[in-house]
Image (tube, rainbow over all chains, first blue to last red; front, side, top):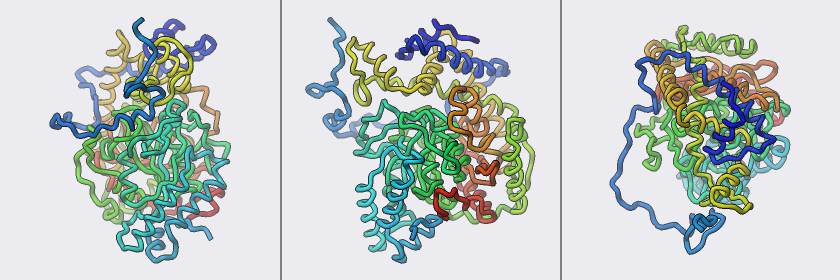
Length: 95
Length: 489
């Protein structure tokens, strides 16, 4: 299947990415090739096959719901571009 | 005099006998990096002061008699493993400024065993690539031919070890990212069973496929390193609670009567003639070692690339949604509302291949397409896993080529992602089924190294290392080095 420029815009929006107008043609071409590659799977008969979500036959491990970590907020926030009073700051959301 | 010795065992002997100190071994690595890495670009960060301090601590432990088999041996980490207080970039502009606040299990495990990390190696951005050309820090060169790629995504680790800059390095393997670079640079590259090594502190790409492993000169070195990396860790919810055997103890077991399965699909038209010859010859060598060869079939092998390019991008698009410029990593300078901030941050800091994979993932998971792509891929993944299980009912180990060709030229496949993806045709199946696999040097084609791949059942790393070691006792391919290394080993 060949994707259109509109498809690229839609996918980019879902992925919170922006594709510059001059790059759009390249994305159309390359993503169409990739989709063509993966579409081969449609020809495989998978009637009655249980989907494999994970390579190990295991169940989710659970632990008691208790505090195991010390408070490291100031230390961890050193990697943030912008914080204020221990909070992460972002552009204004509500006017 | 060069202090670089052929394997860990000899280094440990020399260290204990006082013939060399860890400070000397480490200093020698740092000097070689300084001398050669401008032409290879295999390192993103080098930490001389920290490395020499760790080496001094190792020398004290050796003097005190409390050293283990890895104490004082220098190594490097792929820049995907968090190491406290140091930059961890994953080869991306997104994490160019990220200082890891804690150690990954792989880093702390090898440090506890006394290994000395000298720095962090270059890699494809977020481990997405098979040539190391998607790195924000530029491509890595193959020490065997500087015009060629060392493979990827663990290309920096492979180039650094092959050129003798460090005796060993860590890597990660989601679809072949340890084994393919090992094959293209003449190294031993081990991808353990999914869940064998904790993923704690290892930046995620595709969580049901990612696994940490080693790039070394020999199987005996890999056995020692894996012992220090493997084991249960409750900070990784998919880490397996399975005892870690002594991998060194079984290296010398006899291969008499072991059955090797050779899938006929591994020798298709896509396999370059010189690679095919080297791999066939190496399988004959196993016959001499007492193994029985049996032809087997993996009828769905050709579907492993399409399955991978649905499952991996789907998981990547989900994992990489965390990069929004708020808590860590890059943030755009441009002003706008919150949605603009997210979009611009991601668009400015992710490279083209990462964006392609995120978008592929977003597409195959989007409304109306989920069943046709993602669900169908999970079903075919099961069929590929069933094919492998059927083979292992008859054989102990599966063998074949690691890659379809020897190292390709830089730039050759960059404009054709599908051709680049098909380079992983022989390696992906082991990731899909969660099986351990190793690539070992088995000859040359066009004067470039060729890799033999061995695949085992889940948690059969001991048998794979045993098979690899026995081959390395009988042959000397793993001792061949490129001229840049100055004849190390």
